[in-house]
Length: 165
Image (tube, rainbow, N blue to C red):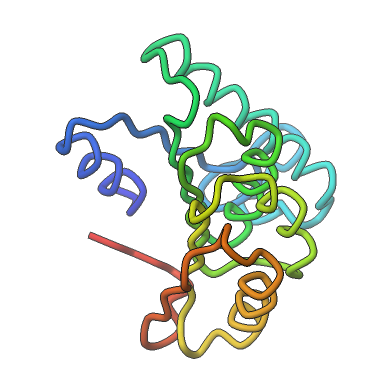
C-alpha cells in the first residue's frame, strides 16, 4: 500500500473526497511512452504536459462525481507532484481553496506564476530542515508571493519522502 492510499483513506474517513494520482513514468507508474517507472524527467516538458492532462481529468472527474465547485478543491503535491499541482491550480485558481506543496522540486520561478493567481493564504509550503534546494525555493517563494503563502512548515530531517500515516 502506498502512503498516498493510506492518506486518501484517512481523508475519506473525515467525510472528504480524495483522489490520488501517480504520474506516468514516475513513482510506481509506467506508460507506453515511459516503460520504466522512473523516466518522468527523461522528457520533462512532455511529462509535465501529460501530467497536467491527467490531473485536469482528475478534477473533471471530481466535478462529475461529487459536484465540486468554486473554491472547493484542496491540492497536495510532493516533489515534482507539487509542481504539477501548482501548474494545474494556476489554470483553475477560483476552484482551488488550498495548495500544499511538500518539498518543492525545481526552481522557485516555476511556481511563482501559477501560485500567484490563488487566494490569499491558500498556499502552504512544507520542507525538511536538511533539504537545501527546497528550503531555498520556499524562502524565495514566500518572499515573492507575500500574503498568498502561509508561513512555511519545516520538519526535522530530509522529509523528502513524506510517508505520512
